[in-house]
Image 1 (cartoon, helix red, strand yellow):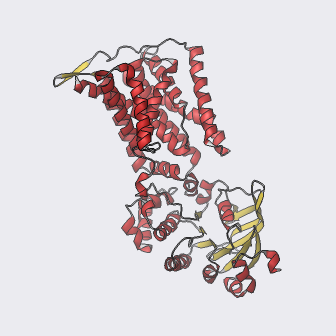
Image 2: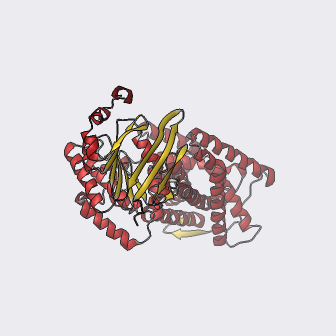
Image 3: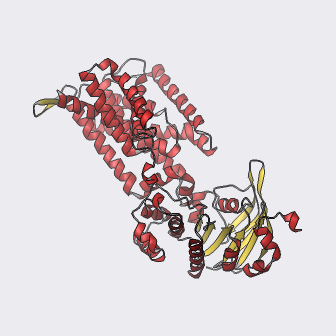
Amino acid sequence: MFMQTLVTGVAVGGVYALMAVGYSLIFSILNFSNFAYGSIIMLASYVGYFSLTSYGMPFPLAVVVTMLGAAALSLLNERISYSSLRKRNAPSLYFMISAMGTSIFLENMVYATIGASFKAYPPLFTQATVKLGSSTIGKLDLFAIIFSFTAIFILNYYINHTRTGIAIRAASYDSTIAQINGVNLTYVIGLVFILAGLLAGLSGVFLGLKYMAYPTMGWITNKAYVSAVIGGLGSLPGAVVGGLILGVLESLVSVYISSTIRDVFSFSFLICILLFMPSGLFGKYLEEKV
Amino acid sequence: MAKADGVHLSVDGINVFYGNIHALSDVSLKVDEGQIVSMVGANGAGKSTLLMTLAGVLKAKSGSVTFDGAPLPDAPHRVLAAGVCLVPERRRLYANLTVRENLMMGAHLRKNKAEINEDLERMMDLFPIIRERVKQYAGTLSGGEQQMVAIARGLMGRPKLLLMDEPSLGLAPLIIQQVFETVAGLKRQGITILLAEQNAFQSLEISDYAYVLETGHIALEGTGQELLADERVREAYLGVRQKAID
C-alpha cells in the first residue's frame, strides 16, 4: 500500500513539476506569474481529448499533437496578452491583470463553445496495472512518471548545455545585457513560452487522463504555483523538487489521513515553508550569495 | 577597411530624454579607427547615457549615428552584429552563469565553434585569472576579476569598436592601473575604443582624443595631452559647472 501511494505521489508530483517548471520558466524571464498558464493547460487537455476521441489518434500521436497545440497557444498568449506591455516597459502588475483577463476569457470561451460538461478521456490505461514486487501500480502513473521526468530531463539539458539555453538563462538574469550580447529578446521570450507550452501540453494530457477535461481545471495549476513557490520561484530544480514533495505528501495525506483535507494540507504546508524559508527551498540565485 | 577620412564612428547632434529631463543635448563626436577616444566628466554628465544610446538600449529623439559608413542600428541585438559592443558600467556579469558561460554569451552571435574556442584560449592568456575561475559562477568573483571577465566578454564578440563604461569604477588603485594598461593594450591589437571615465587623468593619458561632457553637452574637446594641460579640465574633472568656468 505504501509503495503504491508513493508511486502515485511521484506521478502526481511529476505532473505538478511539469507545470511548475513551465510557470517558473516564464516567471524567471518576465518576472510575473502567468495566471493564464492554467488555461493553456486546460485547453491542452481538450486538444488531447478531441485528438483521441473525435480524430481517433493513437496515444503517442495525440500527445505530440497536444504538445504542439499547447505550444502554439502559449506563444499566442505571449504575443497577444504580453508583448505590447513588454514593449512599453509596463509594471508586472499589468502583466498579471492581463494574464487573469486571458484566463477568464479562455475559460468562458470553453463554456460558451464546448460546454460545461466534464469530458472523460477514453479508458486507455486507467485500469491497467503492473506488478512491482508485492504492490500493483497503475500504468497511468508509470507513464506519467516516465513522460514527465523525460521531458524535464531534456529541458534541463537544453537550458544548461545549448547556446540558446545559456541565452535564456542570461536573459532571465539581465535582459538588457543579453540584448547587448546579441540576444534577440522577442525571439528568446517566444521560445520560453513555446517550451512552457510543450510542458503544458504534456501535463494537460495526463491531467485529462486522471481527472477528465473541464473548463475550470486550470485551478489545478494552483498546485503547480504552490510547487514553484515551495521550490523557490524562478528556480527550475526548485520547481521539480517542490512538485515532487507536494505530490508525494498529498498522496500520503489522502491515503493515511483523509483526502478531504488534502488541499488544506497543501496550502498550510506552503505557508509553513514561506514562514521559515521566504524564498523557497532554492530561492532565486541563492547559490552565488554564498 | 579604413575609410578615406578614417572616421569610424560619427555621432551627430543627438538628443536623449529621460521623461522631461534632457539628458543629452546636441552631442556630436567622432572616433577614428584604431584610436582611444575618451569622454570624461562628473557623475550624471551623461557619459553612460551616450554609451547606452549607442548600444541601442536608450533611444535618441533626434540626431544620427553612423558607424563604418552606415547608420548604426538602434535595436541592441543588432548593434553588436554591426561590430559595436558595450562593456557596461558596474560589469553586469550574469551572476547565475559560470565565467565560461559569460564569455560564451559574448560570442552569442558567432557560429564557428573552433574560432570561439580559440578566442576563449586567447582571453585566458590575456587575463590569466580567468583561467583559474572559468568554472566558477561569475557572482563569486571579486570586482577586479569581474571587470576582466566583462572586458573579455565584450571582446568575445570580436567588435571593431568597444564602448567601455567606467571600467575603473569601484576598483582598488592597483587594479585600476591594470585596467588602464589593458585598455591601452587593446588599442595595440587594433581595437577602437570609446571610453567613458570619471578617472579623467588616467584616461586622458592613454587617449588620442577626448571630450569633456558636462550636464548633457560637450564642454571641451582636444587631444588627450591638450586636455591634460588645460586648466579648465581640472575644474570640469572636479564637476564644476560650465558657468563657473566661464
